[in-house]
Image (cartoon, rainbow, N blue to C red):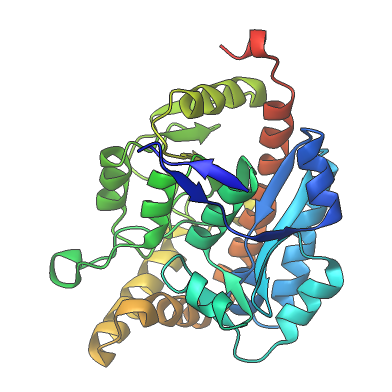
Length: 320
């Protein structure tokens, strides 16, 4: 595939291997939803991650869209992993988490890896997929004034015109700074049935979304118009965790405080910080964070399917 950069110079597109189902759906302009694979290899203890990934695919299909799990198998950038391939990925020891910084080098050496939010956004855009459903995006970390630690997810959202459906940003982050950075980068935050920016395990914060939507077609028109305006950035669709799965404040707040204290005392930082905190939160909440994570992932997959179908159904005359 060949494309053109903003400078007018021809640029090479990534050599992706699309499954037959995904390739045909895109050729027919049918709805497709991208899905990440780090939840399979790193997000849940085995075999729960694989079960959650399959559940997400079922939710996407239930709304009339085609799921496209994205990963790297033996150096191939794959869009649309089969059930057997997902199972093989889950069973591969020592799988690397791939972001835009290490994706190309790892694939060039023939490696196998699972894609983070940022890498999935990048490859979904390369494949021509307009919607990606995930759990929570990364963002600005607490203590950023000392560490300068900001997730590549925000850069990917700023560079790739993909609608990312998530339950907001991971609650372990500096949420006010994350919300501010999204605004600076020109990434609209559109709330699905909410006026507030959600915080992964919690439905509400004091931070606003840019606009609330309660109907899929209206949301699709807003996403479509934003992309056609040509800013180059994506859209964050904020979909709160289902109410029945939200963590109570009296459970969440002391657990987070304890996990942050332990991380600081142990000197954990950089890429090791997020997995450390999530592991400690799972233990401190007796598994409640995992249950909430599963519920919001399935919820986001369902909305991703609805949005993809609504986008595919827009006629040129009905877009605005």
